[in-house]
Length: 371
Image (cartoon, rainbow, N blue to C red; front, side, top):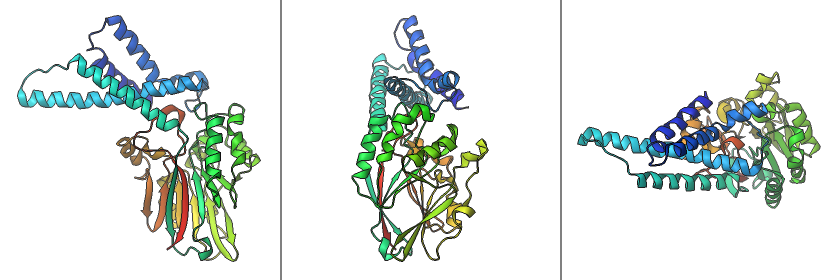
């Protein structure tokens, strides 16, 4: 369905923006073919590589493809606004109005420039974002506890070893008590990504590094990846919990599997198991890749849920559409029946839609406070 929608959007840009340009017909035809191919790159990747989530092509090519695809998307938006304006003029002033070639050129330049900026924002090493979250009944010993949330790294041909090295170094520089990774660490097989994920072994925090799977782990042999994460020094949580201690004080870190698991004959999220055998009175921080089931965590009594998956919506305005598929949760803090939910914009994002406008990536440092 998404490929069909992409085709319609591209045809709209071709018919309403490209064809009216005062260029030779062969130039417009050739450009139209190129734009359609670029805008269907995910479908082509599916046909060539068997997956649209990890096209094994040069990084520079993927940057160029995302730039051109982003330009088409922005042009579709600009053209729609222009067409609505022309329609309003025709209705109220009863005339036929032409759009000058200069206006079309201007819109094209703006779209190309904005898309280039959007790609640069998407592929950069994320800036540090510091927030404080007040936790009910947090023991005094954990007041000021600092944890880092990484999520949706999507290590791939777009986010390779040098990017991972810089991100790890920036995370370690925060000297946090704990690092949690809430899924979608990779895109690709272990054979394709082994060198790129290797820098993750350098992640370091006083109480360790913990990870849960996202939906993309299941697309590329979940069991192999979860074993490899452990070989890299990460502790994986699968429908379970661990207890953090400061003297006699306790804080629980729980994690559930991703909703995609059942499509691959793997155990899905099990909140009963994740909340089993908890120490009395200890606040629970729940790691759940997708935020849509936040109310299930709230029902179990979690104080805080950390999620990713949405990439924050990536583009202002587009985030409203992403929210509709995630029960209204897309970016930032939410109160969910007394539980606090933080939906991270993502440390990176999927290679097939590497655009960010007004929704920055983040390396999130969370300081816990008593409430």
